[in-house]
Image (cartoon, rainbow, N blue to C red; front, top):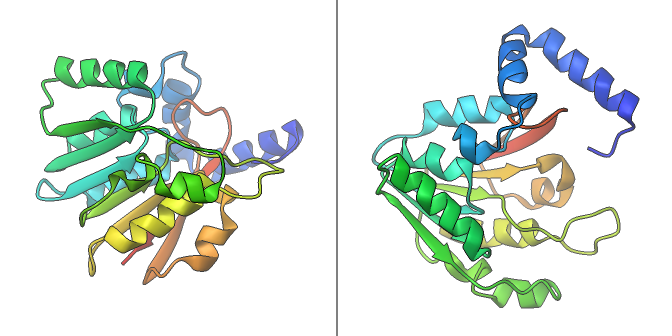
Length: 213
């Protein structure tokens, strides 16, 4: 979040004081040198991880933009996971981690990415990898976002996701959601829940939004 260091510290202390059960996960998973892939956990808020764990079922199909620890987490808890990634070397690492755990229900897609401008991104293979209805869609992965950015790849992915989310009963997850007020404004979800908390491999606090359809 765009805060000063002192503001980040105060926000973190406030979160931990209100959620004492988060202290041990913070010490174990936030102050670690391990990566989310090594932890086999998504790089989301802890509240979002715990909530999605209860939501997922072994008859659900999941799509995610951006692979990593989330891919292993999702594969363990759903029927099928389809993940799109633009870095072949990273995709090989994720593939190796899946094989090591004997997780065979994840499909890893390498797709080329074009970040020249919004229109180029929305028509590129990475953005267009989602082409069927899914129970859960994860908007994460690549982004052009920054304080001076005029557009966001995740905003575009969210618009695409709304075309392919199962209705009723589908869920779109948006990570680092504090960055995307436009997504919150444009969402056609029946309900939106903001899960703000600490998270694995994060020193501070982040938010992950759930859009229920």
